[in-house]
Every structure is written in C-alpha cells, then in structure tokens.
Length: 169
Image (cartoon, rainbow, N blue to C red; front, side, top):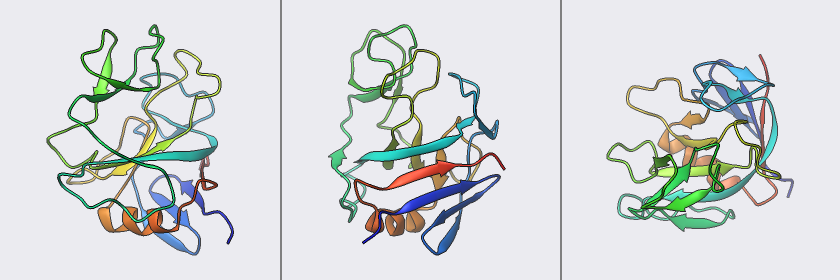
C-alpha cells in the first residue's frame, strides 16, 4: 500500500488519494518564507507525526498514526525564545503557548505536521496542524482545517509514511 499523500491547493482544497475536500488554510495563504505569527501556511512537503484527540468528546480515530489523548494541561509552545519552541508541553509553563484543551471543537482532533522540527529554528513558525474547522469555517493562523467527517476519512488512510504538501497556488 502506497503512503497517503495529501495536497493542499489554495485557497480551499485538500486532495487525498482520489478525493478532494474543502478546507481552510492560513489567512496569509501559503509562503516559502513562513515566520512566526505571519498567518501563512508553510510551502513544502512535511510528514504527519502524531494525532492528538479529545477522548472525552470523540472515540480514538481509526489510524495507523500514533495517538495521544489531549490532557487539560497540554499546550504547544509558540515562544521563539524558549527551548521548548514548537513542541508539545504541559502547563504550567514559563513560555508562551497555545492551549490544546479548548472549549470549542477545533482541537478535538489535531494531526501534528512536522514543520520546523529538525532542527527547530526560532521564529520560523510553530504549531502547524491539520485540525477541525471552526463553525462557521474561517481561515487559520497557518494550519489546515477540515470537517470532522473528512478528518476521520483521511486518518483512516494515513500511515507513518504519509505526507502533506502545501503548494503555492
């Protein structure tokens, strides 16, 4: 079985195998020069490494990717000056971070996209995820957002060899 390849085509299409899904991406579009806080999705091809999910709201997704239930004290460090930059953290934490346990459903499923990970370069961007759409759907800070049904369908085909490609238009 060939690894699943996802292709993000601005402004709002994600292709997976032979299907297309409506999605939203970063409010700044796709950029080869992604920086922290610019609202852009990063151009390039990146592995999918981990699925985080709210086990109090959803069953574990059917996927071959590693799974980790989100805990109330989980966050993602977005502080370029901190040694934990672009990493899963637990709170309390002395750097700035994004809370992963949210009252809305946007982070009920998070697929970590391995952007800016080896090595991690400060200010190059952090917390690039495939996650659920807001209601109503709107652009993200750089992530890709999908509907719940599309997310479950894609995860059922994803493996540790799966990759996502962001193309610049």
